[in-house]
Image (tube, rainbow, N blue to C red; front, side, top):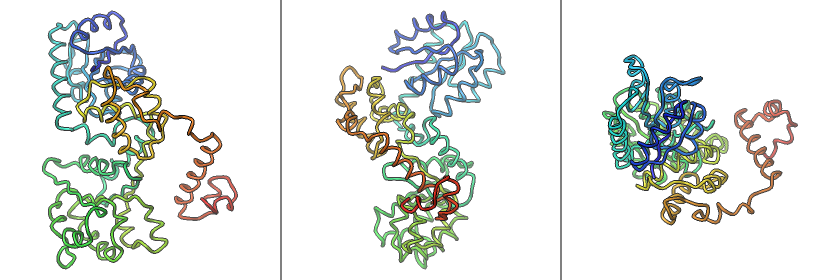
Length: 408
C-alpha cells in the first residue's frame, strides 16, 4: 500500500488529513517537525509528502530542499495558511508538486493526490527513476559521489569511474551526462563495453579508418561516449587509443569505467601510461553498496517500482537485515534479492523469512577483531595508494611504522 508522510506541527491537521487520505487507499505517517520528517522519509520512503510551509526551526521550503537532495523524484505538496504568491512561486521553483492554501477544500487535496499518483505511475512505466538510482540517498558516500558527479560534469576532461562489479557505474555515467548544462534530449548518450565487444569491433567502431575515430565516436559527437571496462582493452590498442582520446575530447564528453586499479596496471606494465593519464584526469570512486547501507530503503523502493510492485513494503526486521548485510554482489545482488523476496512475500510485506538464508544467518558474520583488522588493512591500502606508493609518507599520515605497510 502506498503511503503519505504528513508534516505539520498541529496535531489537529494530522487528524483532519488522515480522514481524507486513508479512504484513498494510502497509509499515513506523521511528523511534527522537519528533522523527524527527514528521518521518517529515509526509513519508510513514503510516496508523497504533505508538508506545512510555516514550521520551526525548519520550514517547509528547507525541508523540501533536503528531501530533494535525498531523492530528486520526491513528490512534495506544500500547504500554507497564508495566501502568499511569493511563497507559492518559491515552493514551485524548488520543485514542489503542488501548493495548497489552508483552509483548502477536500476535493482540492484529493485532486492533487490523484495527480501525484498519476505522475508516480508514469514514472514507473517509463522507469525514469532508474536514471537517478545511483544518486539516491543521504549517506556520506552518496554525498561524496554527488559532488564528484557535479565536478566531472562541469569539466571538459574525460572522467574515469572506478568500482567493483555490480555497482552500476553506467548509471553514474548517465548522471554525469544528464548534469551537463545543454539540452539533454538533444545530446546523444552512447555506450561501448570493452568487455562485451571484440577487439575487431573496438577497432572498427571506436578507432575507425586511420585511427581517426569510428562510427561510434561520430554518433556520440556533441554528447557523451561512455566506454565501459577500459581495463579489458587489449594492450596493443592502448597507445593508439590514447592518441584518439586526446583528439576526440574536444568533440565529445568521454567517460570511462574500470573494475581494476589502473595505476597498479601501469606500474606492472600491463596498461599504457599515456592512455591512463588521458582517461583519469577526473576520477570518481564509485562506492559499494555496503558503504551506503542507510540508503537501502530508498533503493528497495526504487527496485520495487521498477518491478511494478510499488505496493510492496519492507517489514522492520527485513529492513534491519538488508541494512546489515555487506552485499558482495552490490546492486546486482540487491535487485535479485528484492525481486525474489517481493515475489514470495505475503500481505504485500517483505518479512525476514522472505530473505535468503545468507542474509538471515548472522552466525556467519566475522568477529569484531576480524572486521576491524580487515577495515584497517583496506584503509592502509587506500592511504598508500593516495601517496602513490610512498610508504614513508603514508606511515606519517597513519601514525604507524613503515614496516606495517609492507602487506597493505
